[in-house]
Length: 145
Image (cartoon, rainbow, N blue to C red; front, side, top):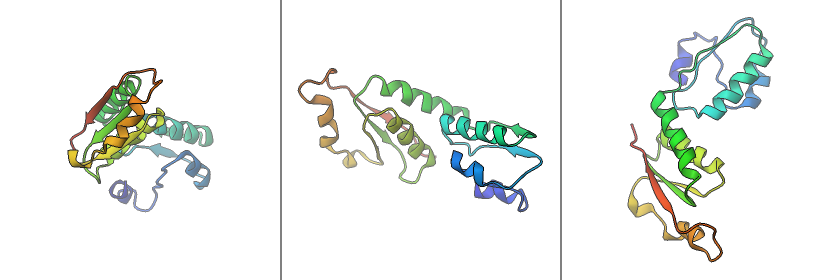
């Protein structure tokens, strides 16, 4: 977003969460774009808050289709598993967003770069006596770009 903000010649504002909308100055015209890897739920919450506050608002969803697809796949996968491990670059925004999306589902979610980082203890939650599901852990592999 820093690079994109540079194109606004000092007229841009970076909003990372809904609470930031209240801190924006009064604006007569608002054009909203997204970091291409922002998760869809956060995007919707932020854009709704901006539209509620500013009358003259144009919203352009610039979230990458592949990002949206991966996030949807992770949300669906979280309905079927007890633990999720996202494999991707440590500094990858896409990987971090996938872990965030998975964490919202209420199951443990972990980010690793290599299989050596996987901890067997992460999977104990899935095989505790009385668990309603049998052990069912899958890796969501995400290539860092």
